[in-house]
Length: 213
Image (cartoon, rainbow, N blue to C red):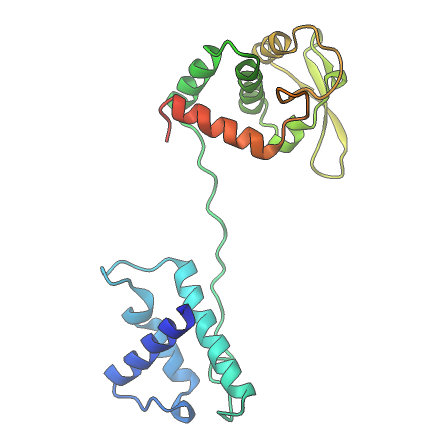
């Protein structure tokens, strides 16, 4: 349906510009003019389309004319020069200092084992900058809370590195562990290692509880 919509859009533009819309008459210059036109670059409300939207249009044209060429409907492929724009993902949105404070205050008020675990995990992430996968991979035996250090497996090559822990973090970890000396550091209620998906779902719930969108 998207391919059909894009090709109809191009066909309508050709007619509005007075071009011959037969396949044999279309060349790369027509396609270039179309892709530079407001029809291709702007939405119905006049705002510019996202690069991902224009990329989808470009892909539809490339695919359609490549098929037409392979099917021998045309002698040349006028869309062979079309390139997609490079779209990098947007940077992650971080918490503002106010949101961070609200989140930690909400977590600090939790008096359940899972709440204490989540508080310790979020503190560890915020205060050390660890990746979530590295944090969840820590075992209790990797910690030396008296020395305020942890051995962490980095995401690159599973190398181990020593990480200094702020006192605020070690205090939260001690409270969470409550004397436990082995196993994964962050565990579920059933004793299994907490997964990234579970941690993300829990964090989302705490953000809602703290009034953070």
